[in-house]
Image 1 (spheres, rainbow, N blue to C red):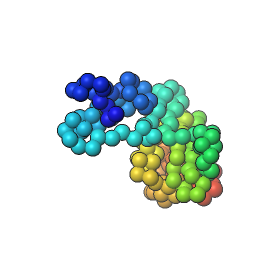
Image 2 (image 1 turned 120 degrees about the vertical axis):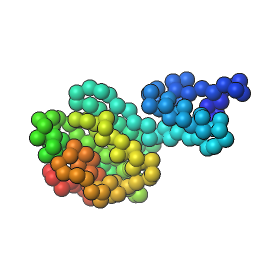
Image 3 (image 1 turned 60 degrees about the vertical axis):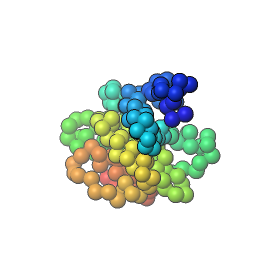
Length: 169
């Protein structure tokens, strides 16, 4: 527990402890371990560690899927937004893909976000931050995004989740 092994002075991080086997997760494990050794409260929230496939289009994900929520008995609402309706994606001729957001149907708390499209690995971090601090889809929907940007697709998916439809569809 807390990255300690059965040998008191040896700690373990990364692929040999729970959580996804990802380099950026291992880095967070390392930071938390050093904090614990220093007498502080080190912690890693594995529910908000993003997964990214560096393909074309990129695929990035954080949190749970709609199916996982249903398996857990959580009632959800979802919203999607296609990059075909995003002006920046169209301008750079890279409009294949979609953003999907999953939120609790009662509280609107974001439970997951999944992006397939240009720069998905960069854009997922807005969703990670929102989830880390317990944001709702409405919180993201009401956040001003620069125009024209790819990240407007995240806002539009949040609008679709919170209010039932995006603006630019």
